[in-house]
Length: 264
Image (cartoon, rainbow, N blue to C red; front, side, top):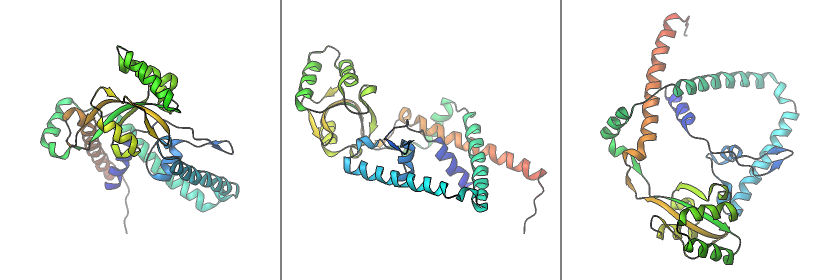
């Protein structure tokens, strides 16, 4: 059952929206290609250019080699077809479990009870929730900061300016970067964001290798025990997986009773 637990944990992860980083012979380079290379979903546009280029280079080489391998005819070989059959069986099990998991409901009372009994297990790292506007020049950043300063609703003005002026990929969503650990951002950006208090923004442009940023800090959480509200999603997933395992165990018992099993 350990393998099933691992599969369930993978299925439970929320996939990030697909990114388009270019094409190779017409094939789009997406966030899934990035995940296959580095093991986790990440927005390459938030990395230093040399790191982004290195990862993209690996993806390009992989796509070229994969295309060559397919054209070579290996997909017609018996061993390849056998491997596909095994993969199909494993995927069928994974998707069936995903379907079963989606039907399981957990009450708030169950979650609260589990959280209270295991409170010490729910820890959180120091994280920040911020938005930013990325601009090419310091002068433009200063101009927008002056506009925000004059606004009565500074955050709404900030989001509007992000949508109309930001050159970063988060601009279309008002500059929203979501929750992140300071170490996930380039040092200059993190240093400036950490200094802010909730509901404030940088009064001077923050320079990084990407350009000039205006950062708005929406919220921050200190390292320590996570609150019930912040732990609800994780608690629900744990309880859902436990119920799924119980359900699977019951099904296995029934299947074994009617199955023709011969072991050597």
